[in-house]
Length: 531
Ligand SMILES: *[C@@H]1O[C@H](CO)[C@@H](O)[C@H](O)[C@H]1NC(C)=O
Ligand SMILES: *[C@@H]1O[C@H](CO)[C@@H](O)[C@H](O)[C@H]1NC(C)=O
Ligand SMILES: *[C@@H]1O[C@H](CO)[C@@H](O)[C@H](O)[C@H]1NC(C)=O
Ligand SMILES: *[C@@H]1O[C@H](CO)[C@@H](O)[C@H](O)[C@H]1NC(C)=O
Image 1 (cartoon, rainbow, N blue to C red):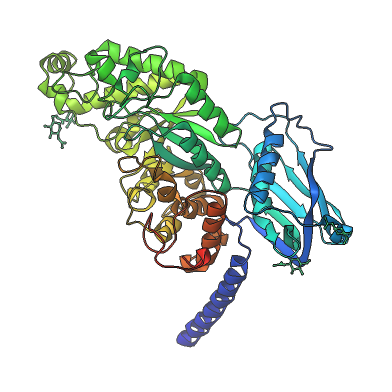
Image 2 (image 1 turned 90 degrees about the horizontal axis):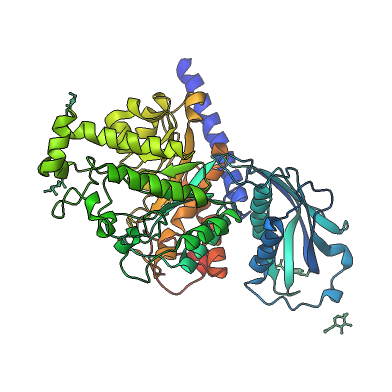
């Protein structure tokens, strides 16, 4: 009897799964990436009128900074970039013409901060009711996401030679699953010129990523101007491979106007050899230059100066203080540091903790909450400030421990979400689930999201785009789309991701083909949609 029930249940389960799979395929044809929270559509078509316009009647948001207006201009550029829309509008029935997009932003506040409301609702009417599509959002940044989705509903019609919105009427209701959806860039291993960074920011917005983690400096070079300590950027590779303070402010503002926060990082006490080019006393000694000299008060004065300068331009709630891969040998090998350790009754691991906690306190004094790489948690998690977000990278299973300890976490496990690992496929990026083995809802809330990491050892302006895309997009859907709408098998989304990859190419982003591991060249002649 029991066996029979189990058998019936199995058949029912298989049937349900088959129906879901069919649903998955039909959802797949929608070609929106990342997949929204909910979507419905019809079967008719409308065309964008020649003077497709932004209408903001009834909106509380006055757009004094022009964020909405600029976002709309970029929407028009995105729509028009691929083809010259030279169709004859008088040949199109006026009842099929969409006059514009009516946008209502409910909040007057356009401060971009962690955790703001990014939701939006978008509707495009059926034909016969010409007029406006309607987009409503709490914040202007939700509206920008709505623009991205709208741009993906449109396509160029080669018969009428104007932009068409097929499958109207549309209703899209959307909001992100995670509030922290990041991409790391590394400007220490290779300098990235401003236009390269700006292109990366533009492409992040297409995939609704919202945090640019800027790993600015490291052992190899210190490209950023720090007004408080003007010799720090003596550690740049060359005079020209540097960012002025104004350059950094420009990056932050460029990103912010696209709804993207910039998370600045100084990685201490390891990963900091370049600091001592300008200020050699930051090194334990010339022959043993890393980690930064824990025994020298000047080290902490410099960190304070940097974070004080940071707080003038990096307005994100968080600053990243690194703290990973600290090899403390130079502290015990250098006589004056060793003497200091003895005097303060510290062994080297206690000194590592002392350093990280002191740097945390400096960051807190400048109004920041802190992100630290996971080694800090693994070594002295219970000593970290409760305002710490632990950044996982070494492997899986860490988020689970962090949230169980009541701290927040972002996930970047290197086996799945490191873009410089070229052998990691988009399918692995897609299937990496930040809430693996975390079932308690209160603990789930402590996982802020995740980040894909584009470490710069083998990447510069010549190959960064194709190393980031399309794999970062796979992670972007994981971070944006409700869990129940995510494909359980990446094969269900291959076509839709290929479509997004081709869309990136059409917009001038050098996204690589899907076939094979990261950054592959197209294998043979063929359509973009099948690569
Ligand atoms: C556009 O179409 C209208 C109506 O068919 C026609 O009268 C007009 O000459 C066309 N204009 C151009 C520039 O082809
Ligand atoms: C383009 O527009 C024409 C005229 O409205 C329509 O018949 C056709 O189906 C459209 N083409 C596509 C590919 O949607
Ligand atoms: C740690 O640093 C010391 C001194 O620079 C070096 O000799 C040693 O190889 C390093 N250890 C590791 C594991 O990298
Ligand atoms: C440092 O001291 C602490 C506290 O006595 C001890 O638990 C730890 O094992 C020591 N670490 C090393 C590397 O000696």
